[in-house]
Length: 566
Image (tube, rainbow, N blue to C red; front, top):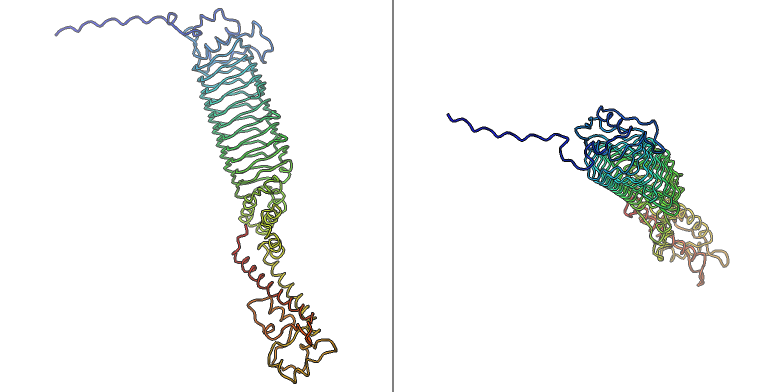
C-alpha cells in the first residue's frame, strides 16, 4: 500500500506583539503609563475598581491623570499585554484627559467611571455592555445617538453634565438612571432621548435637576417614567417633552416634581397611570401641562397640583379620573374637548356644582361661538353610569343654558327654549312640569270661581237657553250686571253643577271629560254689550286648554324619552 503524501507544515502563528492592530489598540502606544493608569491596568486585569480618589477631582494632576485613549483601549478589550477581566473597566476619582471616543466602537466589557472628570464623550453608534458615570462630572457634550447598550446607563448620584447629553435613537437594555443627576446645557437641550428604546425604567427623580429641556419624544420605555422630586428649569421653553412616547408602566409627575416650562405628553401611550399628584407646572402664557390625545391605561391623577398657565387634555383617554377642584384653579384656560374617561375615583368630586365649575373653566371660545358639547355629554354619561342621576340631570340642564348663552339656539327659538327650561328643565325635570300644571289648574280654578260669582259663566245647553221659566228665574241679575247662573235654584237638578276646580281640570287635561266644559261657557255679551269679565274668562279658558295640551305632550315625551336631551 502506497504511503500518503506528507502534509505540508502549517505556517507559524506570529506572536501577539507582532500582530498588526489598529491605532490605539496596543499597550505599547500608551507607555510609559502614568501612576493612575498603572493602577487602572492592574485593577482591570484583576477585576476590581481602580480608586484614584474618593471624590471627583477639581484639577488635573500627574497623580490622577488617565488618558481617554487608554480608557478606550481597555474598554475595547486591551491586548495580550493588558488583559481585561470580565468585570470590566472600573475607575473612580480620576481626571480623564481628552475626549472619550467610542464612535462606532464595540466595548467588550462594562465601563464604570465613577466620580471622574470627563471632558467629552463621543459614542455615536457605539455598542456598550454597561455604562455607569455615577458621581462624575462631564464638562462637555455626550453624543450617544444610536448608541446600543446591553445593560443600564447610570447618570445618577451626583452626576453633573455641563453640556447636552444626547441619546437620540439609542437602545438601552436596562434602565436609564438619572436619579440625583444634574444636567445643564447652554444650548437649551439638557437631555435628549428622542426615539430611544429603553427596556427598563427612566428615573429623573430624587433631586434630579435639569437646566434645559428633557426630551423623550417617540421614546419607548418598557418600565416607568419617574420624575418625583425632580426639577426641570426651562422657563419660556419646553421643560419635558414626551410626545408620542410609549411607556408600559406608570408615569409619575408629582410628589415634588417641578416643571419651569411646558410639560407635554401629547399622543403619549401610557400603560399604567399618569400620576401628577403634588406636582407643580409653571408656564405662564402657554400650556403648562399638555397631554392632548394621550392614552392612559389606568388612572389620570390630577390632585393637589399647582398650575400656572394653561392645561390641555383634549382627546385624552383615561380609564379613571382622580382630581380635586383646586388643582384646576391655576389654569387660565382648560381644554377638555374630546377628553374621555369612564369613572371618577378617589377624592374626585361627583357633585354637579363642582363638575359644572370644572367645565366652566374652559376657554371662552369653547363655551361660546365654538361651543364644545363633548365635555358636557361625557360628564353626563359618566355621572349617570355611576348612579348619580340627579347630578347628571343638573349638568344636562347647565349644558342647555350654556348653549343658549353661547348663541347656539336659533334666535326664533330662544324664547321657547327658555320656556322649556322654566317648565320642565329641558325635560330633565318632569315633576316640575307636573307642578306647573297643578299651579295653573288651581289658579284658573280660583279665577273661574271669581268669574262665576260675577255672572261670567252660563249654561251651554240650548234647552235651558230656550226655557222661558228658567230664563225668567235665573237671567235677571242686579241692574247692569249679569246673573249668577251657577247658583240659580231654578236650574234643573239633573244639569251639571258648575264646579270651578272641576271646570279647570276639564280644560287642562286634554283626554279627560268631566262635562264641565260641555255644559258651561263664558258669557261674553250682556244686553248686546261686550261683557269683559266673560271675555276674560274665555281668554283664560283658551290659555288653559293650550297649556294643558302642550304640557301633557311635553310630560309624556319627557317621561318616555321621546325628546333627546343630551
